[in-house]
Length: 492
Image 1: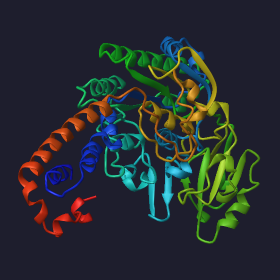
Image 2: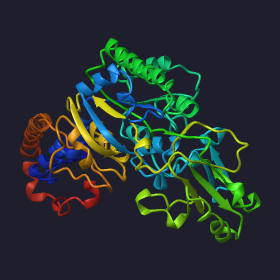
Image 3: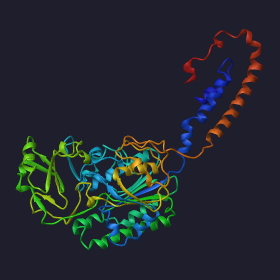
Image 4: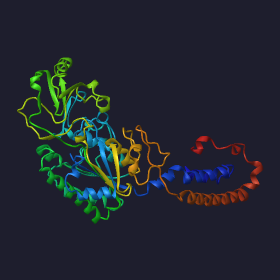
């Protein structure tokens, strides 16, 4: 377009010199060209780490010097309200989408989708079917569509092809892969040459969740497990230092949920209240998904609604609005929620755990840890409370990436930042907007100067051609040559 317009400026009776000036300057100093220059700036780096089942108060239970170091150099949040139900897959997907489970579609660790007529389980290959995940887009997909790169080490869902893509670098889930190996790979990806390095990383570790289930959070044996997690955090910090990344990477350490102590004396047996032939058991305690057989919803609900004082039965549409757990086809018609510390089983013949999670997300025992440090965060700052869904817009702000519509709010969490977002930047729950770019760019000045020089050169040639070649024929030029070019010839 620009090249053709410049040539047109040389033709007799063609475009005016002022139009030529506008045509040349426009592509040079247009907003798109300025955005391109700004987009080339290095993207800040962020590493999100989840220690599954790390309860908020574990860091005060035994000496945790590495957690303390992160807190002293950064921030800590005392109360983190995660999403209902407080289980692994729903909460890990909420952290990277900013959505409640009813919105992103991963409503439980075990699900049934009546539209697909398929079941999902974190224990089977069904978890690799993209159809379960595509009601939302995780942050690594958004980053890559924005021109960035991501790396994932075992984060739930990160080894699934969601919306047509995997993370730029990722590890296929394998619980036997050591924490140290996962860390080394992520640090390698973060410290690669600039044109290959990832901007956003996610790291998952199965402990202390596994030990919490087996031992119970109140067991003295958990002390060594918690101390071991602190040592693993120290290893991660040391590897970042060795790679020269410690002061460059924004590090967030959190979890998906806490853990509650159970007792074999606190078991609710469904077989005492309802015949198994009337329903299908979908998800496990403490929030049990019940799929009644066709036409049996009211009958099953009637048998369970007042069956046990330590269990609440909800029809799907009656789940309290504060839980945000009604509006998805994968939520079963009836939900049974045990009171804290109680277990719902069909009978006592099944396996029993001494610790579990999944209860009401306002219970203190269900709350995860949250600490963070890095150039984006304040130092030695303690915040009282946040919601886990607010983490997503916070991460998007740090990464200079436009968030997708989400249930979180940057306003709720911006006090964690070393410099708060500009007051003019709106941060509603739906949708958020990208952070403003700051700093002066010389592109408009340089572009204007080059454009003026180019136009002056063309004007000189124009004057020479008109004066030397066409002046004698001015009286005889045809009527057609006096007409302006048609609009389609301008390619506007």
